[in-house]
Image 1 (cartoon, rainbow, N blue to C red):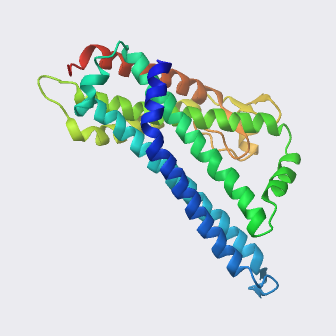
Image 2 (tube, one colour; image 1 turned 90 degrees about the vertical axis):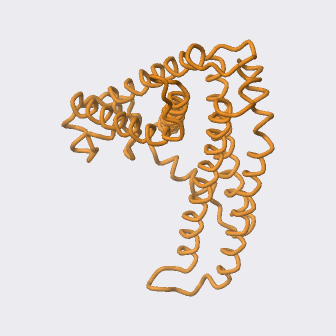
Image 3 (cartoon, rainbow, N blue to C red; image 1 turned 90 degrees about the horizontal axis):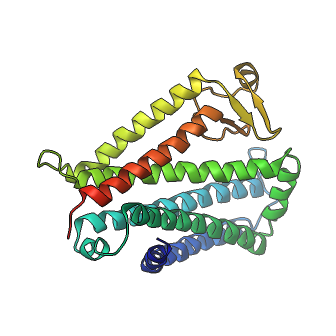
Length: 282
């Protein structure tokens, strides 16, 4: 599996490295614009320092660059998976001594890897560039904020883990929908309607996850590493239907998180089974 993942990584490197370079170039352009506009930082507008407004604009703009880059990269990787099932390259892929689970695992690992690399590289690059061009020490500001948060390490780790799990759920639902679209059901295939199937599956999964979280109000507060109930969650102002995602207060629904784990395993097994037993390209 890891040998194929290495091959997949090389095959996608040219496009995705180009996407990263393009995102960094766009970030540089945004920060150069901010630097030019920040020439008169002593002027106030509406009672707010001009510099503060520019920094706020910088953060928002860079968030859009980051999100756009990651979405673009994921669309490319999803298209790559679809080409394996619908184009001639699939003849070579499915002739390799790989099980359905190994093929799917390789695709998933590479997609999560590139998403992580793109996110980290864009964030670090912009933090360094902001200090060089604008003289704004974002590293220092973020460190000050982190120092004021109890158990920041647990919160950060929890945020990373839940983000990876959410990404894995989304990717596996996409892979599942594309694979189902290639499987014949009573001599019919849904083909390009896989995206509609994905939307339907996502809606169903979201509803079930929120329903479970609401019916079983058990939460884990990562800032204190303690389990809390519905009453304490209500006092903290936490929405009882946020599912398995990490709330802004650093609290995660335990049943929602367990549902995500079961969903990841189930979607992986089902998709791997179809790839191995139901897809006949060769």
